[in-house]
Length: 155
Image (cartoon, rainbow, N blue to C red; front, top):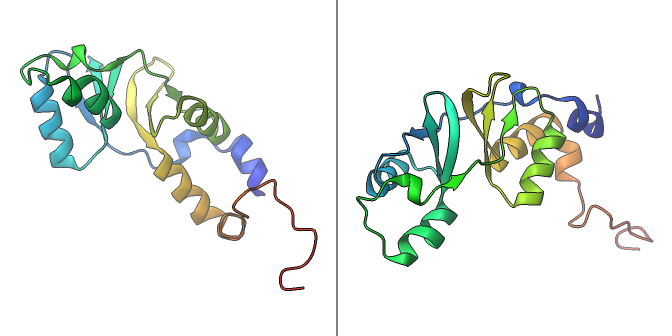
């Protein structure tokens, strides 16, 4: 399978999803920040049962949280991004890359057919997968993929 075929056919379920900091919407901002710091992660997934109701990222912490000088005892539901984009475990890498690029997301929650949370996929996970499975294609890409040299290097 070549690089382009892999993007179109390889499923998210074949990636190593990372365990996320999963929190309830009523947990305090301070406690969520502490857990994110403890786990050295850039986001927390907000769940009601097994359903994703929001995501809280470093960007949310800066824009909605820390810059506004919030009460750290406020519930995370006041600061989270509601109804985040989700990846189904059967989506392809191309779908994940498109969603991440269009929304400028670094993390996307992964769900099953019943919309139950399974894990988290990050840009780093996708880059790692591609570089492990297609090292020549990844490491030999020009800085601008549409850039084609008109003459040989050094000529």
